[in-house]
Amino acid sequence: MEVELRVEGRNMVFAAKEKEQVISTLALSPDIGGDGTTVYQIKNAFTKGLYRRRGYMDAILKDVFACMLSECEPFVFLGTREPKIFKKYGFVNILPPTDPFPDTLGRIVDVRKFMGYFESNKEFVMSMRIIDDMLPENDGIFMVHCGPEGGRLNCVKIVNSDMTNDEGEKLAAEVSISVDDLIQFGFGLKKAKEAFKATVSFKEEEICTKLDEFVFKQSV
Image 1 (cartoon, rainbow, N blue to C red):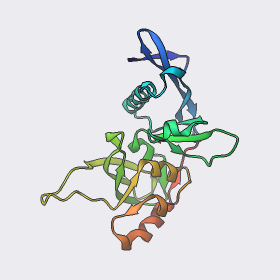
Image 2 (tube, rainbow, N blue to C red):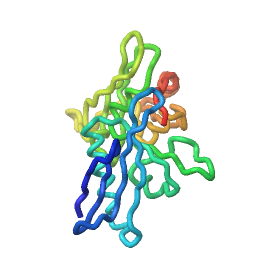
Image 3 (cartoon, rainbow, N blue to C red):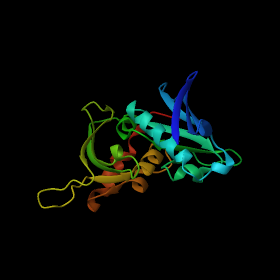
């Protein structure tokens, strides 16, 4: 199997092939988000019936993520009537499902860029343990901050998830959150208390109050 990438107009088309026969395809299409920036949508994902569940779409999606990471693209979304296919790759609902319309799913690709969509109205500094079982670039402890005047958040990875201190204890952060919960928090499907877990229980209310003040400057 090989995955071929070609450009068709503004779209990037990924095709998994066997002996020059195209088995599976999808298009990665740029759209204009709510704040005027470009966001990417997956369209026309398809695998020939006899070849389904053989890893072709898996190979394509891994190439899509690698391509987007190389360009520091924050997240990707899609509309689908078969959400189970994509949820195993970390896609989750980012809009409330509404029958009979397709589910709208999203997946964070570059967590540092994604955090830049959040704004705080005052100075903010917090260490966050972000969990991503598929993309190691997103998995670890990040310092999230903005300056004295507030504004967009900056996010810098400071340690990997498996790093330990001199006593062999894993390094901790003030809060932890999965990428699934982080994108749903951003799109308003979860409040901070549902999405984040504070490492010090008596600070939970204080931390969640700060996080709920964030404004998310993006939409699909």
